[in-house]
Length: 373
Ligand SMILES: Cc1ncc(COP(=O)(O)O)c(C=O)c1O
Image (cartoon, rainbow, N blue to C red):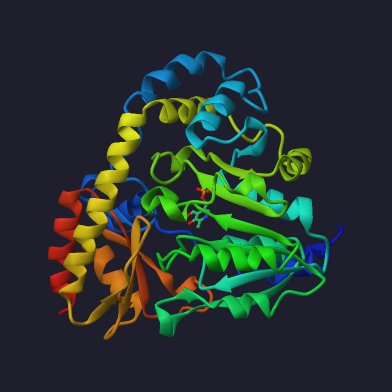
């Protein structure tokens, strides 16, 4: 018998990889805590609590008879709708079939060779670090400054730029801190580097319009904006994301992106979501209202500090409890929030709470009283 020592064949970066820790699903809580799905309040993954456009179901049913046929790698109707929605050219857009995560990975496949440097200010979305590690990039960490309410420390980015810098990640609003990066700070970084600056706008729909770089991105040689259908459009389960940038960048990325990753059903969902502008506008408005309700409710607890946010979630600092223990107490009562201890550079006493329906927020605040002061 041949004994295969498979470990010796695995890439070192994969052996040492600290994997992405996803937020908990409802299914997991049903299995582990025996709570009924309808009794669970999910405030852990920054989704849209009102779901997706009600028009989508019917469109999925119509498309289902075609799922034995490959999807079009670039769906012209989706490109047309996106172009209208964003007010940018069709050839400035790349759509990803595993959400914005796929666009992040495609950026690495397009730009980063072994040993190239990328700059990631932390705490931020963990997927940048995971993708960078898999692609053998050298990560240089900059910071969002806690002492200044997690404002981006621009110098910590600029001081890390070298000839080898290929990509700089700027998440705005930042996940998990919720704050935006000032326009002048983004401009300063773009102007001081020829590396690709990735402006991650996964939550931009919940922010003030002046912070949106989507329409400006194609004007630059070295900027790409990331967007997604997973948040306000309520399509996290369909996995559609997109990038917006200069034609040249988009063209190169199209060469390496997985060809058929965007499915027939996900394309139909995205098209229908874009066409139902009324549902979209209502979700933005109610999402912001829910965030305000949550913020005002959380501010009343003296044992926590809540940070202001331009996204669909709030970062909460716990003064008297560790996040693990806090999340466990909530889970027992059927509430999922995000334990932030897996976010690099944050520590073990932060949680992130997503917006919910108004009823869910009310219930959550009541349950919270049982756990803390
Ligand atoms: C900042 C940020 N960027 C990108 C993503 C990935 O989104 P998608 O579901 O489109 O892959 C997320 C998901 O939570 C995120 O928080």
